[in-house]
Amino acid sequence: MTSCRSCSTRTALLLALAAWGAGCGGARVPVATTPAPARVAVFPSVNVGGGPAPAEDFDRAVEETVARAGLEVVPRQALDEFLARHRVRNTSGVDAETAVAAREELGVDAIVVASVGAYQPKSPPRLAVTLRLVSTGGPPRVLWIDGAVRSGDERPGLLGLGLIHDPARVQRIVLDRLGRSLQAFLHGGARASRCDPERRFRPRLVFRSPRLREGPFKIAVLPFMNETRRRSAGDAATLELARQLSTSPAAEVVEPGLVRSVLLANRLLMPGGVSVDVASTVLDKLDADLVVAGVVRRYEDGGGAFGAARVEFTVQVLDRAHEVVAWSSVSEGDGADGVWWFDLGLVRNSADLLCRVAASVVDRMDLQVARGSGGADEASPRSRTRSSVRRGYGSR
Amino acid sequence: MTTRTLISTCLAMTLLLAASACRSSGRAYHDANMDFGSIRTVAVMPFSNLTREAAAADRVRDVFSSALLATGGIYVLPPGEVARGIARAGVALPTSPSVEEVVKLGSVLKADAVIVGVVKEYGEVRSGTTASNVVSISAQMLEASTGKVVWSGQSTKGGVSLGDRLLGSGGEPVNRITEEAVDDLLSQLFH
Image 1 (tube, rainbow over the protein chains, first blue to last red):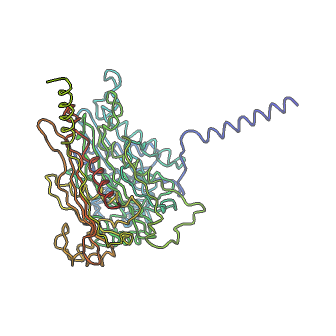
Image 2 (image 1 turned 90 degrees about the vertical axis):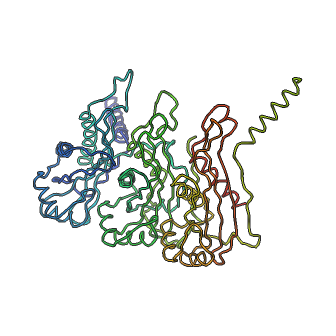
Image 3 (image 1 turned 120 degrees about the vertical axis):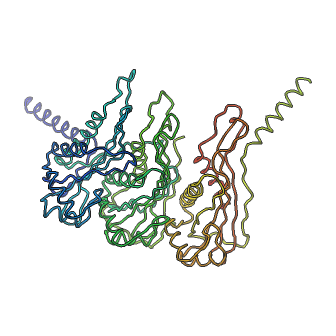
């Protein structure tokens, strides 16, 4: 009797430990509903940093990272011939025709798109990379997206012993982190994690409609308008918002290449910002629920106090169901905000700051899945009187 | 000079210096015959920029639109929609539309009112060896059906305060001051 009692106690304890272990280690929710890809093509990287771009060695390093994660990579020569044959000049995204052709001619299940958000080989070296896996054959879908940023002076440590002067080492750190994330997705379907949202970077002015509680949503992120002097700041912000939104279980982000092709095919221009007409067209063509647009007003390294980075952008989300604004925010991030003690918490890299500010916006958006997944409600258009009002102020 | 006189003089000078900081709320105008409760949708036009900072008007307009939307009392049309309306209505000068243009815009955008604004100061102001940020905005609301001005307000925030003079602190960031000025304008609108 005693032995049976101790057995059942031990079993109960083991079960409890197993249940606790399953809940621990981060709330990573498996998201893959399609089988993991086996063979991929790695498109040449795109520079959205506005500065110098890494050399071909970087593309080869990305291919090695993808191969180490367990995927078969199409040889570079075959890919170059494919790109030349189909006159694919823009490798920042995948449109429907390219996806179908890649599946048929290269036999790939997915395409890896690499974007370089920051690159500085001089000391202190800096690198910011975003990788995403886009399915082929049929409307291309973003299966996985993640990014990593590292500066040589990010963690100087005691007496500067943690400083990194070698750009190759910074590159290795960034690509290793992305490789691990990709591996976690391929083996367990785990969604990539978001940049840590911080209170000091929360949007200062916010309008949030209760509609954002009625997910899940299919979201199209339109190219952000760039009002900075830095080239491609708009593209960097678009990609970062798309990445942060994709970490939400209530959101499926439309492949940016598909959004771009819809805008081009329908000759849609957005002078002064996105209008309801443009939003409706994009949402209809992509069968999406929400469209995200915005303006980047500041995106600079070292423009703030103590050489801190500065980022400023606005975000608006238009809702297809009601044709109204579902979200509007103004975000301003200064890497020196809340820094009081020996540069602790100082953010010098603009790509890093953009990630944190965008994560804070998405965190505040708080997209939720409707209970029972009833889908879009039947409320009358412009039901703004029911909208929740929140005025967000910074941490100071 | 007795001690008492000295103290009084110092106190008076301190009060004078404190009052010299540029912070003011202008007097607002509300049309007494206007039913402001009927205004549900507004279009915020591009603001006029009288400052040296090229992006000042756009920044202030962004903050104003977001703050107005965040009050929950009024729906603010997206700026892209306003731009489309301006093009369709053929408004010659978006920062200062005429009465006919306002009426036309109202029907194109289905807006109840149109808001125009002017950014008079934005950025650094110097006083002697001290510098600080200042923002000065004025705005008007025009009823879309008639083109009449039904509300007008102005606000100036920031400037060189006593603390800035004594401690050389440099004042608050310009974005923070912009929000204060916009808050003040909205207080004038809703009160």
